[in-house]
Length: 280
Image (cartoon, rainbow, N blue to C red; front, side, top):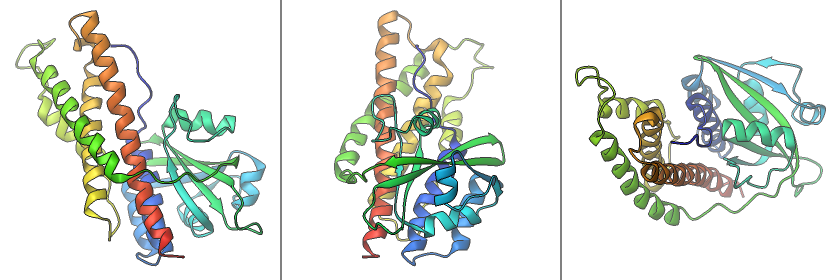
């Protein structure tokens, strides 16, 4: 199987999702700051925040380097709008600032903030990119993005329909993995279902209260599909017994990764958008 686009580290995705969703609920008065801190602690014990450029440092009131979650909470509180974007080489999600875009493409996601300011409708935005640098440490880098227009949140119903089709494709991939000859003896062959359970649990995200059942369902289904894709990529040497099968597998994996990317982004931004509407 050929190399595919980068899969974001679980810790950074969990940290960004926690900050975005719990932060949005906090801004609408549905949870406390301690709830956000607890959610971020679940992603990593240590959080370090730096600014990549002077504009981000000034606008977000960041020093040279800060430790802890206080700066993250302050940035969320002082933003009029936030969105989780998951850019890919074929869809940059409207981000054109080169350093930030390169970083977001590398990690797979970026949290975009539109701060409150003298121009209430300004599209001047800033981005937070999270990286897992150790088992218990996530670093956050803030970038000035220039003008980024908030895009409408996609229809969750449409995403859920597409995801149901994707689950069938993912199940077929999983079945193919199970039917291939293991590279080791039967005694040493990994238990696919046990490994799938581990990958699914590793990507689990605790969502805030008052999250709709549909959003939870979409997040859970996207997590299951992503876990199967991760499992396939772990076993790439054994995937595809012919060049045709390998090419078909590559295409299926890329389609599923794109599908889970859109599903996660839409579900998280649905939570954020609903919270922002309650503030108006």
